[in-house]
Length: 482
Ligand code: DUC
Ligand code: ZN
Ligand code: ZN
Image (tube, rainbow, N blue to C red; front, side, top):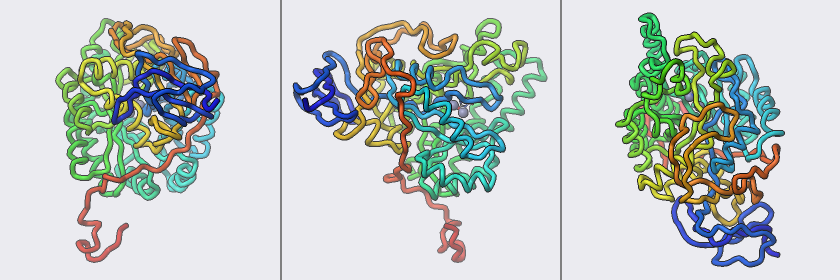
């Protein structure tokens, strides 16, 4: 038999086209795409189903301590399983450096957490919290391992100064690495938070007012300017504001090496959720905070226009108990409640149901936003995110008509912020390198089945960058600052 497995009778969807064909898989890779494959040891019947590249979840927190020191409820086993049930075949969680730690130590810690447990192929984005000269000197080793993106914070105790941010961008840019940023102005948040709490406004609902849109917009503008000065590519995570998305769109339209994502919570939930009785609003505390309905409409427009390249979950699972949300106590002001909400399993069904089924985005745009763009931006294309000959057979098979009311997920959480939503379109089977990870509601893969994926530098073709006159020797009296 020429194939180990054939997927027959389905409608294939890629980031650019939709067509009917069979897929033949051998040794974990796609080797044939043709009208009819009849020589396979094993067959999946995909009649009336859509066959597409498995989702790539590029923003999730798994087995990671938050800035406040709270451990996520999901480890690499539960996190990857939940992601797989949500249509993903690969994910890229964060490996977070602790202050004082070498990057070699950070990488080792996360390998110990991931290798024995992940059912999905994975990589890491490295979070830099302590960019000393020694740590910056370690970055080339991290790139050589295939970790080609890392994240910094402009807020929280783990924030970097603008000067440190420039140093990081500059080293990253020289190695073709992508710097990701959580962009909110720390002092604006701190000032608003103090004013609210001093006035006795401590309930979860005040979390949203404490983090105004202006704080995100100011920080995104600054981050784009810093990246431009450092001549380095930049990715802005979890954009939640119309103003922030517009700044990204403007920079991109002028050649800027800037990419950004938004998340389901900013498309499908509003700040009204924070106003639930008692402390229930804590379930909806995430940062940046939930916004409003007019903002949702504008974020959709940016997805449609292409200025936002990804929809990522920002799965940050902290349970509604003292291991998670209330790690700092139950009777605390909103600033001490753990930030983040789960969504790794809901990301793609929600995007499919509200995006494709409601006519906001095409099926091909769905594939781009859920998989192919992540593979391109994070250096995994064409191995991941693609239905092409030679690609890993990382494939999700969807029933576009299955209706379910969202309820409990397969993560280690005790709530689902999207529970009760009617969702049409769910993944049925997910393959990783040609092996069934989940199939018809059952987990098939064993912990440890996933592999670490070495990633390439970012491809900057079509993103020439923006000039900075003061860096140009013709305009700065001949100084070469490259
Ligand atoms: N930022 C994230 O990216 N995730 C969770 C919380 C946060 O502030
Ligand atoms: Zn963040
Ligand atoms: Zn996050």
